[in-house]
Image 1 (cartoon, one colour):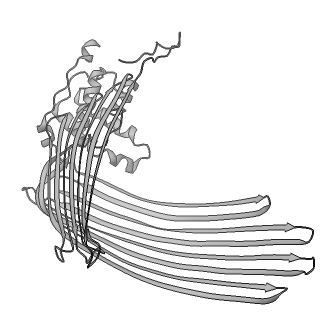
Image 2: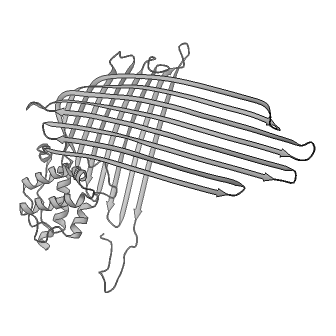
Image 3: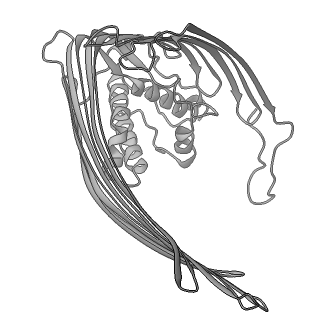
Amino acid sequence: MAAALTLPVSPLGASDFDDFRVPDHRSRSIAASLATSASQTTRNSFLGEESGSWDSGLTGNGNWFRDSERLQTSTSFNLGAQGLRNREETHWLNIGPSVVQRSDQIESHRALHEFWTIGLAARVYPWSLPISIGTGVTNLAAYDQDWMDRHGVDRVQVSQPPPFDRRSVTQGDVNEWRYSYDTIVGGDVGLGRVRDATGVYQAQLLLDRLGRDGVLARPPSKEARVRLARLYYIESDYSVAHDRSAKFFWRDVEKILSDDGALGPAGLDAYSLHHALEPYFIRSFSRGNSRRTGWFAGVQFSGFYRNQIVRSTDHLFQAAYNADTLVYATDQTRSDHIALSIRSPLAGLELEYHRPLDLRWQLDANAQARTDVRGLSRLTDVQSRVEVGYLLADRWSARGVANQSRTVGGARDQVFPADQWDVDFGAELSYYLEDRVKLTLTASEAQQSVRGALGPFGSGIHVYERRRSVFLGLSYSILRGYDAPGLVDRGRPLH
């Protein structure tokens, strides 16, 4: 057992990330759901209130996905309809020696929402040269209708001289229809290939933990490590077929290690399996554990089109009566019709570079410049980002980030011309010693400069803003432990 605890695990270098290849895998799913609910509330105090609601929905979705080293395709759809119906009544009655006051209010609301979405995307590497061609299109449509009605009667009766009987009536309804249709297209062509090789990193950390727990009989072969890395790459596919997918994923992990002869005779016990499932840091970091490798340089284009129509009708009737004699009445109806059309075609350049320097260090950089194809004066956008990260699982985490973005828009797309430049940078350092110490230190600075014009004949404006922030958090456990004599061993911190 002691020998197993000191068992070395085969080291991985940057070449393991470079040698990673995407496994050929496919997933598909079609699902439908139906839901309905109803509620009713009654309340009696000085007011009598009663309300009820009912809503239901029917939705369906489907996804087809294929991924491999040379080809990636995806098809998806969503559609559905949802209905809503509400009704609320409020009644108030006050009876005095000579005065009777009464108010009755009824409001109702009905709504119907229908939608559908279709998305298609593909990326292909047609030749042995790392030339990439990608394209995608998404269509979204939504149709909404709302009907709102309200009816109210307020009455005051006085029996003392001079007696009077006054009554006011309010009736109104609002009908609204909203239709929107969006189309989003995009594509790029370039040289280079960027792969998500996070599975290489996850596989090595898994083997490190299993080696420390004495589960491995010997270091796994390179072929087994490659299979584990590819298995992590398709881990999300398990949830397509299974609601509780983790047990099936870890079944295959154990099979790979067993077939390789690296797994000990006891297999994965409960302790080692739970240890493997623990996050690699006290915070389940999402940025530091992404390990991408490769580079890409190319041209990109994107387009956005929206067509929206809104129609509404608002009707209001008010009347006042004195002893059932009409005193005054108003009847108003207003109709609105709004049609909106937006087009935004953009094109530009894109650069990416990702490099796992070793198992702990990661370098990521990307930049893009886009402009409106109808003219540079309409919109120009330039962005860049550099991030360096370090991670020693279960102990240290550090990252440094720098971003800059500049957007210049002309008067055609904005009320007034504007030039905005944003720069931010920061660093984060975290240390974690299980059961004992948690330390986090962050520092960041952000600067923003905005230049614009108040109007065609107004003077220009310049706004500059700088924000700095520092955070330090330290937690130290002074005393921890538990005892259950005769049942389990004493529990004390690991460090």
